[in-house]
Image 1: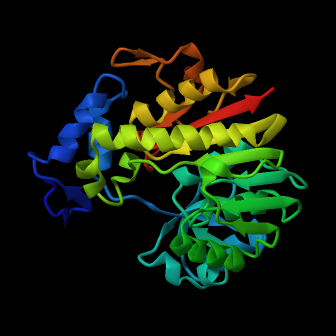
Image 2: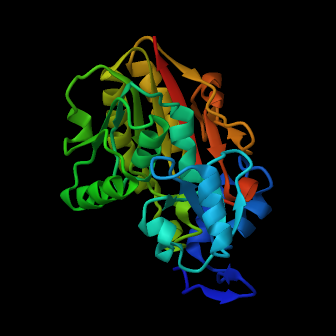
Length: 318
């Protein structure tokens, strides 16, 4: 079992017999610089936030932070992302006012890959708690229709609260089972699917101990159904982005490859983000052949950007 982590010299250390860390050995041959990957998992995650241009503009917000003597470093790859040097970022006035949204750096990737535009009809199929929803609304400039769906009543409350604080007024919240979402002909759909969450280990090391192949395969059934439905409710010429925060190929390339075989007229587009280090999707894994096309997916490992772990794929419906 994972021992209680303790902090020493700013790094969380883990006992050598941690079964969760041993479970990462299955990725040793596919993750570049594997030892650096393991070291990164043991470090705490940097505090990051997104500037919300529905409530302010970038220059004004940065000026406010400087005036409040809040140390920050802008992202290289995304103009609205910041790394903050502050213990309780949620207590910042700018956060309480909705001018910044405390959000993991790597979670900002999927809306960027989705590329929403003002005036479009967009569905966030697994929306709660709303970080990506509010980012999409910001990119749409509050113009168009953004449907934020989540079946869990307890999670919808936080989704509504985050949208209200962000000033996202073009959002309609729904509570459908995503596998049965009604046909609507969306321009773009985001499926940030429920997953085993290995990529969140820097926030909670216990997720590594909770992982099992049985759990991955169980979630795979749900993920496949969600992605298939997303493709079905997308108009011809539209785009679907599928993302997870796990390393397991069963939940990533295995889901995308299956969907390509299930829904006709779908192709993959390059899902990499300029300025952000990543690795191509896996064409094969433990005897399963996913195909060269899935190399257009992108895997993000913690040591590549000092961030969380993530997987993203962009599918175009022709």
